[in-house]
Length: 167
Image 1 (cartoon, rainbow, N blue to C red):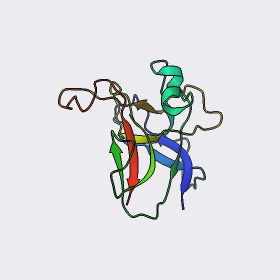
Image 2 (cartoon, rainbow, N blue to C red):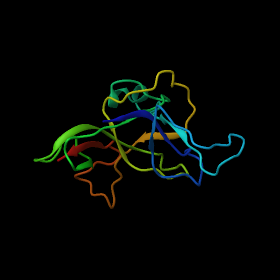
Image 3 (cartoon, rainbow, N blue to C red):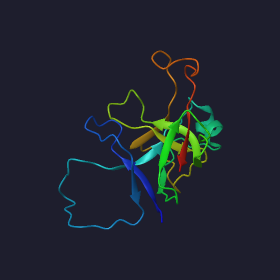
Image 4 (tube, helix red, strand yellow):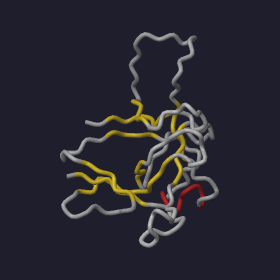
């Protein structure tokens, strides 16, 4: 069983934002609602932000230009009971099964809203017709910063890989 849909979360510039991304279903069901009443929390779609700072909108990282594309999501079920995301690795440790690998992403560190680190598959998908720059909950590549993070083994400014493993 899996759920496919749309990546969502709070707007990147709202100071009262939630920290997490959410996976919104592609078939919502509504309860009671009042469209003319403004609620305190807002949910926006997710958008990749791999601009000109990264070659051709991230194509060297993800094999295609993702900049300003809207991001789908999926929740997958594994027959294994435990899973973990390991930042800084492309392969699982012995005894674990690799579900997928990619690059570590999060919100921009200069934005006022909080975010979290997630592992974006190295061949991510895009929503059809979602190339307009509308922002929302935005994804940026995460890179290493030397200091309290030891270099070596890490390298200043290098984008971090990630892998999702199950057991």
